[in-house]
Picture (cartoon, rainbow, N blue to C red):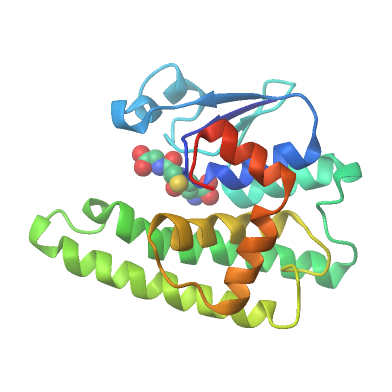
Length: 206
Ligand SMILES: N[C@@H](CCC(=O)N[C@@H](CS)C(=O)NCC(=O)O)C(=O)O
């Protein structure tokens, strides 16, 4: 397998899952500052120009975080990343989708890429402010979900990787005060050897 990633991007969550699985894979770094995500050869692999992008051993390409994470969990059952039981499976999918499509795409994307939300630079501070509010609201919702729980959906699962990356962005990248259960969840994630390996490989702050 090949994971296309950019250091510190949402691909950190998939990078963690690959480390949890422990099967051989190649991590291919894209330099966003050089626009490598939009140029060949990567644009021929994923014309969406996005990471995470996973190339399977049969050469097929998988995109979209929730789909890549679910596929990895399903295809490597020995890693126990797919929750057991219909209810936990449903909750893992629900939480993953919320972290990616709301907390990331609606919240953090406004903070990191305000130009995608308004072409006018004079609006960017407002766009970023709204992004921060949306990310904080989403994290507060996940904080309630975690009340009395160690992990998002029963035992540790692929869904924890999605919550991890938005918590990491909030707590470590943007210096936000994470709500208590999210801060504790991020602490549990940071203590996992798979996360530490990813941090080291991507050269990120621990
Ligand atoms: N819907 C996509 C979103 C992925 C995404 O937005 N990735 C960002 C990095 S966190 C990216 O590749 N951005 C490229 C760019 O901004 O040019 C998914 O779920 O995988």
